[in-house]
Each structure stands twice: as structure tokens, then as C-alpha cells.
Length: 423
Ligand code: C5P
Image (tube, rainbow, N blue to C red; front, side, top):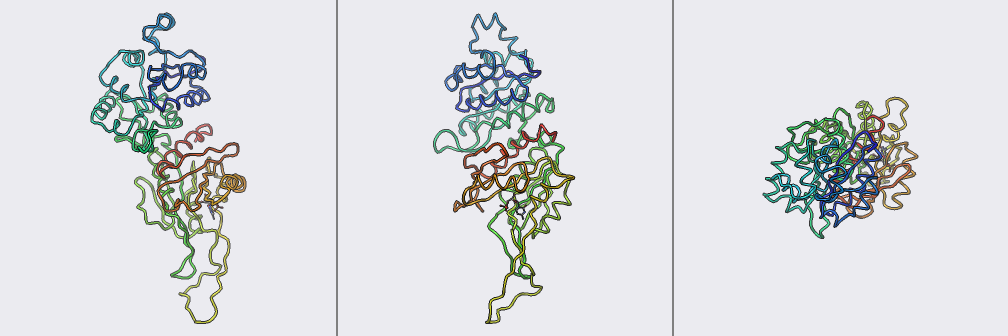
């Protein structure tokens, strides 16, 4: 293998096996070569040909293959690597690892290796929560095996949801990078990259040492001391993003408009009311490595907020003259000095979602727009969100997800985007 870093990827038999093809390709882009073992069950989901084509070398399947033994042998296979990664790690593979079974090539390599092992579990939520799997996972964590995921969400099986979805390739890559860099050392609890597993620690996270600034919620623009202009933003998405960034190890400043949510744990939360206060607070919180502008900032405010409560006088309606608020996202994205390395905006639209987001990306000068369709779907105030990630050259559309999962994935995505610029 020509790349300077390499992993031995063991692909188990689960529907998530298909994600390994993307994983291999993305790892290659980052200079990490994958040598692959495909279990018998894994080969029911992806073919050895697909795996070897992407990996750029033959994929190993049989323990008692004379060719394989003559080529390299299972002991050497398990040791001529920097890290073993098991993805998807099925309940079966986890049970074999926990008990030390060695009855096929994958389990034999796992037992014979002198290298560290990272697993990405993937299974049905009931299997994941079963006491047998709980026992096996506790054993593996005691043995120093590193773990990334699983995430909670909808399963391939219709109608099922809960913890058990394999971590996404960017999350697995972030965990691999951490493991290769020796930033997590055994005896080790789960990496719990996004802090979702018990025992996970933000100190190990991919954003450790970074400052992430997040805006969230609506703004209130006073008309008089008791009335204001507002919108339906609940702050759920922004608060979830701040929590996800903190779980990934970042120092997080959350600048929140008026919401009825608790301040997220481990996040410095500053409460503001108006767009102008929000901008001033954001500027004061700089410098930041990443800034994520989730707040639904009011576009306009009353030109002259009345100092006293306006009275009905039975005559003419009071005029309500409006002026434009400062655009916080554009102001920060277009800063010459002290611009965060990554500036992310949100775009709530009710039509032409992607086209408007692309125009907004250019107009505001940010690096990424997370576009969501708020047309009559209960997104504002609801718990789910359907988003498209729009950058200059790409649109990535995600399925409808819980806002916390959108937040987790967004942070994992930003870790990937941020790495090359040294964030
Ligand atoms: O222009 P529009 O309001 O659709 O843009 C949405 C994005 O811009 C969001 O990221 C929002 O937080 C940000 N924004 C801002 N200041 C404003 C208006 C929007 O930061 N005054």
C-alpha cells in the first residue's frame, strides 16, 4: 500500500455495509489506504469486487485460502496496519470479539492483532439494547476497543427507530483520525465522538481546543415597551447544534434570542433580545474557529420604538414604519480581519429552497448554507428538520431527521470541512 497510513477494514454483515464503499473512497482522498476483509455475511450486502475496486487491492474473505495464506497470512494481515476498523460491527461480530472466538478470517484477525481496534456498531435497536449486547459492549470497552456511534434514528426495517444506526462515514473518519493520531489511548471508554455514548468525553472530541460560535432562536424587535415583532423560531435547532459542538469537545458560545429552552449543558449561553444586540454580542465573542448562524433574525425593526405603551385613541391606526436590521451572518462572513475559518448560515424558505440558498451563499459570502423547507411542515417549533447542505460546488440533501441528529451530523460534516484549513 502506497499511502503512509493504512487501516484494515473489516466489513460485517449489515445493511450499513454499503456505507463502507463511501468510507473507503473518502479515506483514500485523505491519504489513508484500506485493506479489507469482507465477512461471509458482509458479502451478502456488498460484493468483493466493489470493495476491491475502491480499495485498489484484493479484498480478503477466506481464512483457509491457500492463496491468501501464501500472500500474506492472517497473522500478518492483522498486524501490517495502523488500525483495525470494524464497520458495520454487527451484534455477532461484537459477541465474537467479546468472547474471543476465532472461527473465520475476521474474528481470527481481530484476535491475532497487536493493533488498536475501532468499531462502528450497527444493528436493530432491540439487539443493541439487549442485555447480551450491553454485556459484550462493556467487555469490549474494558478491553480498550474504541467505539464510534451508533446513532439514533430510523432503521432500514420499516417503522423501527432508536439507537443502532451506524455512524456516518464522516463521523467514522473523524474517529479514525483521532485513533491514528493517538489522541485516544487505551484503556479507553468509547470514543463517543459526538458524545452520545455513556462515558464519552468531549475532551477527546474532534473539536477539542476550538471555539464555536452559534446563534439561535428568534429576535424580538420592540414596537413599544410591551409589543414586539417576532417569528416562530423555537431555537431547538440552534441549541442542538451548540450542544453537539460542545459534545465534540469545542468551547461553545451560544448567543440566543428569547426562547423557552434551557441553556445547553457545557455551553456559555448569552441571552439577547434584538438583532442589534445579537450582532454586538457575536462581535464581542470573536475570535471563533467556526460560526454557525442558526438564529431567525428579524429582517426589520420599528423605525422608532415608542418609549411608552402606544394607546388606542379610537381614531387613526398608528403608523408602523420599519427599517432594516443589520445582517449578522453577512457582516461576519465579509469581515476582512478575524473572519472565522468556517461561516455557516441557515436559510428557511417556503419555495425554490436550493436555488435561493445558492443565491444566499454568494450574496452573504459564507462557506455553507443549511437550507430547510419551512413551508407548512411544522419545522419551526417542531422536532424534525429536512435540510440541504449547499456549498459553492455541491448540494447534499439529507433525509428528514430529528433536529439533534441534524446537529450531530452537521458538526461531523464541519469537522471534515474544517480539517484542511487547520481548524
Ligand atoms: O436572509 P435570510 O434571513 O434568509 O438569511 C438567513 C441566514 O442569515 C441565517 O443564517 C440567519 O441567521 C442569518 N441572518 C442574520 N442576520 C439577519 C438576517 C439573517 O444573521 N439580519
